[in-house]
Image (tube, rainbow, N blue to C red; front, side, top):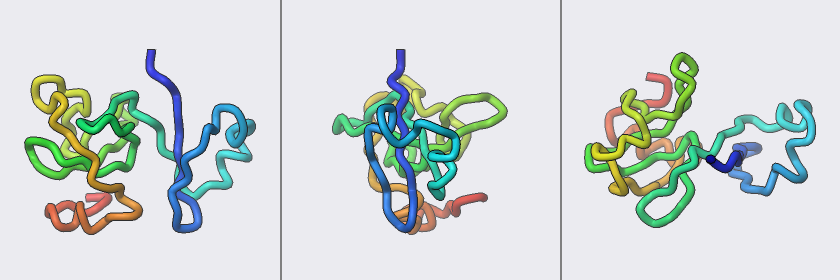
Length: 114
């Protein structure tokens, strides 16, 4: 069973907290943040937790992690599954996120929202 965790982008900074116990007590608390991102339940090759909005270097290039509303799952921005087993395995490393390092996606030829 995957651990449910969140982080938030708010006022130009990334907030990492144990929100299960303090910040996320009500919907009003959640809505005070600019953007809330969920933990995927996966870690990169260095053991760092992968969240929605992270930019990951894979064997197939630089990709952003996003939520797919239609399929109700986390995926890379090219539509491939983030837990693609043989396709990506442990060969994925977080190199930034779309809020603090948008140039990493721009440099790869992808822009947020395209």
